Length: 193
Image (cartoon, rainbow, N blue to C red; front, top):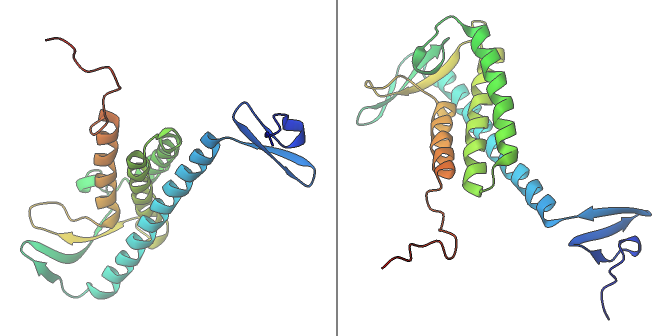
């Protein structure tokens, strides 16, 4: 039996799958499903980053108040608070940095909508989770609006999980945007001999 091409009767037409639910038709395209999966991945990555960031910051505050802990080589766990932005720039500009963070989160959501690869979506999710994680600190964690940092190396400013995710996500996004790892379209190879 041939599929019914009439959308009014629940068949397929022009690549749309039409479903009836309580007499209402819903058309689903594979692009819509793909977009939904991207949003789920983006939100999932961001949620995991926020959760891990907040748990590790709470553990740092609870366990590193009195003394730092040596991990390996130059890496120490040492509690510090940063009222500035990256690398301590803008100390004391907490309100301004929070406003910029909110704007950045909005931009990342827009970028996340247009990310066309899994690597791009994961990169934006890492950055989004990191930005939200640090914003949570600025708004809720302390009266001074400081962000909790605890990874200390001695040769790099002290940082946290959110900071690491922002950097890693940025790297993934740059790789995605540069096209590294993409195959050339068929027939585009240099044909000169």
